[in-house]
Length: 283
Image (cartoon, rainbow, N blue to C red; front, side, top):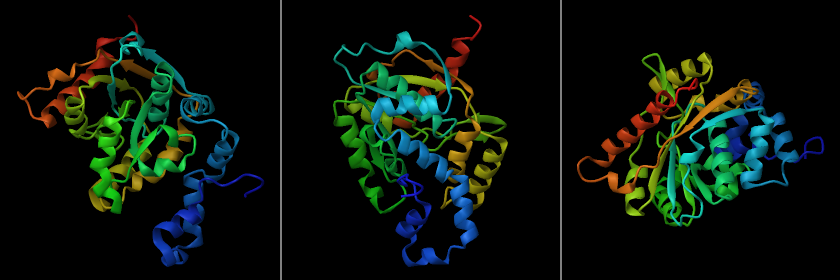
């Protein structure tokens, strides 16, 4: 307990779990800096206060806590929840946290919580999120389980919400844009006859974040240093307005043999980035 609050996120414990006996060699100032940059006290306070909520209710509470205003366009493009079909919802990933929370609250509300995220397993540390997550450890020793976990998600009777880039957006040629989308959502949507619903999420992180991400991606690679800063970026984005544009479902039959799954993934990615242009705000 910490001031009467149970610590869900505990940097010292995470370091011990990841590093074992070597954790004691991490300088105190580095531990303190980590606690500061991931807002350990503030996050634990929120998790404690929202501990009675889970799934869609918890996601909606996150949206409220982060004081997010969501301008959602194209809600009519969300398929009817009673049509008996299952869908794959795919989006660009500009923020790395808030966008996932916001989209989960929108999809969860529309489909009575009947959806699952395919997410990095670090997010399973958040109790309110765990019920709607299928965890994927893409970097650790469980990486061989990645196909099995994806399979479990698509075989389930839940809608799937995923960010096919895998990482949040980078600054590419001066524009905030996802890295190339992976093909998994195409091959699995075809296999399980799920139409794909494209979603555009408008937003960006700070210049500092993109400088760190560029350095990390170029020179470090093995460790995603930029990921450490995502919680801090989330707090910097408190009180902002975000534009969400939902496109028309793309029938799974579209993804035929005329293109490779990777080419179809690029096709859907392009469709997502066209959405804000097709739905001008001032119309």
